[in-house]
Image (spheres, rainbow, N blue to C red):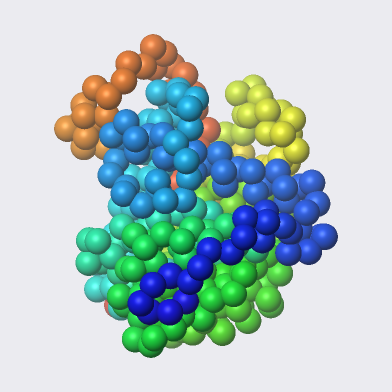
Length: 339
């Protein structure tokens, strides 16, 4: 991609084709579908004023179907909670760090952090090659997305092919998180620095991996960096009736929660982190997080649309959690980070 303007858009067919036959199997297809769902939900919530994100419109169309108020509030709490932890890490490290967003989908955090002058030394995103191809298509075709990357890049061209973009401050990598040697190789090729304090983020990612696969990923993350933090957002309390209905609904859409046994409780979530190399672990369910939101912010979002059943919101929020873990970084005060 030349510095003056984005490269020409690839033909639409190159976005929808699979990188290999194996990546088209039914299980992965269902998981990839959750990326589209999350993007549509975020786009809708942004469109009615839940939070400000001028970039998501460049990745996903506005759904004609109105999303339920409890879904919108759930996404607001998720975006707010993850954002607070990211900013706490950036403050502790004074932005002299790197962020690796695992299973990033159409996430826009890089652009929003740049607008707030809070970019880390480098921001990496990893996802299935097929999703990365689609994201790179949008970046190449839309100057509001490509210009901020080029602005920070010191050379005339960006290294970009179908499954990878590398620039001075931002990289997008197509890789399978279950193949750790490939993941590490590709990150290092894009100048991942294991000496820098590193924040890893996984939102509704680990639950789609088997317990062994997610444990291996967490161990790799804990052992690869001297100072690190891991943020995990996903399901919790999945053993009850409501949890079973969630599992069945996803299964009907060819989406199996392979790692659901780790989502029994906040304790099981923390235990997974502590038993795989992390020194501290904390977890809150999203209702607790919602109840801790600044009252002015709650009043603002609750005035956006009427919620008929507060009980339904509570049920939904009690089945998602935000977890964070740290390792090393004592001199930086990483252990003090809390929501």
